[in-house]
Image (spheres, rainbow, N blue to C red):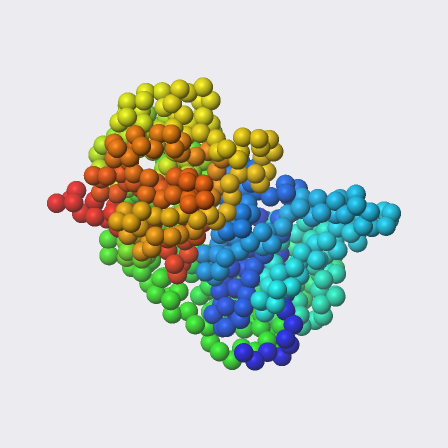
Length: 544
């Protein structure tokens, strides 16, 4: 690959005007285009909150907590990075203010600063800059894209903006660029797009010493040439560097929108990198073709406790889209709060669905609704998939209603239960701190030959990601097996039950691990693919 500079190049993505404009999707889309041109690209997210990681945050606060293979609890945007690039991220791809300050304070306590007064500049900004460049140390990447969380002007973001200013000055004109994502709102009363919010956002950046190289403008309507010219003039950028980011039908359309806007070409020109090869996006376009032109459709219910905020289940939702496209089947997803399900109304809530997924979570709220849901789908042969707590609820339901252990429960919800079919892992019993202390990351799982799980994977040995403290109690395994709920996936090191599936049921499978974390556009997870397939078959049978 021809380049004009062999050094690692850096792209920073900042946001202005308002949060939730889609910096993560923009970063992932740009990375996809650059990857499709043959460049080795990775993305990292720097979050301005003081939590060390999002692991202890309520999903209502920050959406899903994504888990990497090396056991890092990270921002949900890392899920987008993996789904778009089909490349695994790690602990190094997500940094928070809490982690930065923790590192600096630790160094100060050890005397690393030789008695100097520790300050935001230079000590905090130096630590941020070192993290900006950390991924380049391996020599694996040509380009590193860094997304800065929050909005320019927030007090929490100031050290990051200052660090970008210094880093850009250190790196040189052609090694580092800044992309600023802003909003160009449409006023219905005057029927016009307004550029002033973007102008003020760029002014805020300029006051901090950072000149954006490229503007990406979120908009409901196309940007006219006159508006682009105005933005270029008042924001000190070239007119070809004013990029329209119009609302898309799907997040997976965004890379093609950015390709049409020549974002990748503008970026490569500014970084003095070659643009000779055209992006290879045939697989991506084939996925979109299937996603938008299904030949069938199914109605699937996602039963959980955070259903008011879909981002709490972001990876599951996207995994179902991947699986739907693979099956050329539209997945109509209904988010159902388990808190409002009971045995009295469960048929009304889920009886018309073609498949039900019981989602992960923590705590007692909504547990009985999940158990009632699982009883209904088990007895009525509706395709079922359970994840983490969803598997644990399936075990509890089976113990109560098939094994006859009426008080069976998890010690997480009822520490005094006489039948703890789910209980605290041995290694967790002395853990008191909450952050980063669960069983996290990828672990081995051996699949029973001839099981549905083994047939789905096409192998007997897999690795999947975990995030839990409680597990299946092996003292009850023989009872479950004899009654038909089989442990078909086991961790070989600790003999932990990872997958259960039910005999004499068209599709009833649940996993202690989180398959949604490893599903990508180009490699949909087999559990989701077969779940959607089973839902589709169930629907066809019901319609006969």
